[in-house]
Length: 239
Image 1 (cartoon, rainbow, N blue to C red):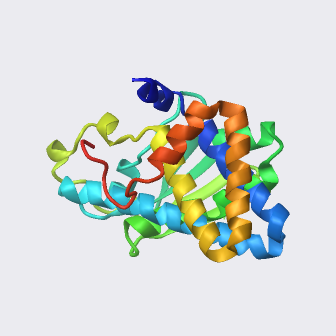
Image 2: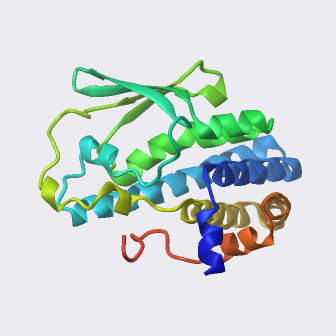
């Protein structure tokens, strides 16, 4: 019961801060030149795994692996107002501008934007690639990397439609809790940094986990580490 309540306490802020703290510790140990490609590779893997799970859900619902399906199978949600974006159809594509993002806001408030920027450089392309290698999203700018807004173009978003809509599970059922997403991020970063940076990677993860524990408490950190042991390449049971 206590673990369930602890998992409910996780938010996108936990996810954003954990990532930035890991990046900060890795760069402090091996330098940005060495750390940057490893960090970006970790986010590529993380995003591809998330995209793959989304594709599995779509296939279970008899949906094509189209851009329309991709945009319908998001796994997360945040409170109203934490994300502000607009989407404009253009010749079959969807052009999105993000004016407010809870990740960017968290990093800015905590003075961690220089570390969080690596997430934005890779995540959107990795998600789409994991869903289907035939799909393309153009990332023409991100706020954490100097653009006034995040600018994305989802190619072919209006080419074709969803099918078997009656077979789709409720959107709420497709959403995964932030404890799951944060544990997935931790597990992937842990695996890639250990493999590529060895003892320096281990030390970076440990230091970041200590900061996470100091900020959010031992119970939250224990849930994070325990949940990081699941298989993130499959759809969670009951979802």
